[in-house]
Image: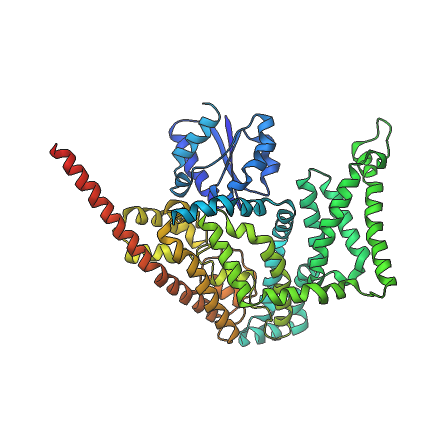
Amino acid sequence: MKTIMLVCSAGMSTSLLVTKMEKAAESRNLEAKIFAVSEAEAPDNIDKIDVLLLGPQVRFLESKFKKKLEPLGKPVAVINSIDYGMMNGEKVLEQALTLLGE
Amino acid sequence: MNGFIAFMEKYFIPYAAKIGGQRHLVAIRDGFISTMPLMILGSLGTLINNLPIQAYQDFMNNLFGEALWKSFGGNIWNGTFAILALLTAFTVAYNLAKSYDKDALSSGVVSVSSFFAIGGLTGLSSSGLFLALIVALVSTELFTRLSGNQKLIIKMPDGVPPAVSRSFAALFPAMITVSIFAMLTTILFGLGVKDIVGEFYKLIQEPFMGLANTLPAALLLAFISSFLWFFGLHGANIIEPFMQTINVDAIAKNVIAINHGLDAPYIVNKPFFDSFVNLGGTGATIAIIISVFLFGRRNKQYVTVSGLASAPGLFNINEPLMFGLPIVLNPILFVPYILAPLVLVTIAYFATSWGMVPAATIVTPWTTPPIIGGVLATQSWTGGVLAAVNIAVAVLIYAPFIKVAEIQEIRREKAAAAGEETKDNF
């Protein structure tokens, strides 16, 4: 069971993507907990997660979150902007799994 | 165009990104965001009391008596706009301390205490807002630094509950911080400044708000937001601290004016942008969706993405369009994406200042669909008409560029098909 957190400024557009990713996970029989939060809520959730993906519009947060998460061995990455725009849940899930080394 | 984009990516975007992540600005933004529900509620209170429908007013007056039924909205106002600066002093300090991983709760408490040490009850409402912001930032900087000093911590014997020892750890730093503000006030008092909150308001906050209420300021805000978005950065988010600092008091002052049956003095504020400019999101992108369906139907990618983006677009969420169309770094759409908001700001500004539409002043959630948002924010159907006119104007601005993109796409397809054919021949 892997926990994936998506972060954007208000957690709105990432929450759209979450639904698509959940569907993608379901179709591959993958057990994963995927959720989206706003930038402000993100630090409180760090303990619960395995990987953090940032919306491309808040890519300037990458270094801030890397500083916090990398010592814990939790990868941080920015979502590919085309996949983000097309709301491609399959591809973004793939990106998360690759980061987790699976 | 490519050279320009490369130049901006190298010299401009890193700085913009730094501002977007700057600790104090983020604290101000998040501090305001946590009071946003109260601002919306406060606006609704005003809306209930001042709905400009005579029949409704008469009905309520006859049923309950004017003083009684209006007291509900008044009570809401007391709980929201009337204590805005107080709440801000706490929430900004809390968020700043949290970003330092320091005791956020104590920092908030110390900030509120410092704020009252300066002006007593005089700074409670939005007039004390700027001062509250400054006190929150300075007191938290002082307090969190002092808290890190081992010499100021009273050692507790083992067995004392951690909560107790934590409150003792904050004891001296808190006392010192608040005393500094109290002493500062005494010194200023000795120098003849009797009312720091009032003086500060007159000297800094009021002129600044006046400046921010002009058309050039509104144009600048609209420009920065869409310009940053063009490079894929969340422009609205980055300028939010400035926007909120200017706007929150402007809204509060408008609400007071409406409560007294006067015209709202501040035209440029956040509801103004949300209802008349950011239609469908930054750049009035709902107009792009409409343009694509009207004028660009043969561009398959545009149609697919627009279809995908239309549901979120109704609630002003435009990321799918920004990254999917894409608008980000798209040389064809650069011009209209920057131009449309500027034109819309100008139209809305003049429509308001000429009195055709009441000033936008009721805070609605930014996800309120276009046109409905215009009606609610201005408490008038004319606000909805203005929003609809602005959408139409934006469609006209985008249409030629959508058409160009379509022609390019068709040409590209033809070239690809021709390429395929020649391959088949060999």
